Length: 191
Image (cartoon, rainbow, N blue to C red):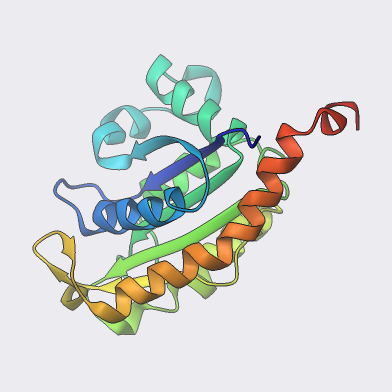
């Protein structure tokens, strides 16, 4: 029997409602159809003031420490951020500056981003993938990018984007199942 995977979903949007959070929710919902998940959501907009005041890990509040511990103890991550001036927001980067550099080694990560137009789609390859490459995380090959036109209000409505989300979940499933089997196996605890 497979154990629930600890999935941490990080939404780097600073506002609510948020297209970035809607994208995260859609990806997590597709993953949850395939793998048993225990989901912890980190919404930057809800912790922005506290996170911005955290200059190093030793001074983190209980809430920020709880989110950092969840990220470091996760079996997998879904990370999404809005694109602002060609990159991820500074607070998004600051959150990961506080994560221990060895905590994400070989952790499967689904990358996602939102932006005003398709011109920002390469943020997945040129900003997010290198960031998680530093952590030696296993960024999954299929990322999900959504532009403003892919939403009606704050709901994913574009058929092509929905298909991309399904494809990302399908491609992530074998990695997540393997991770789940490894943590569920009594032999894995000995190794």
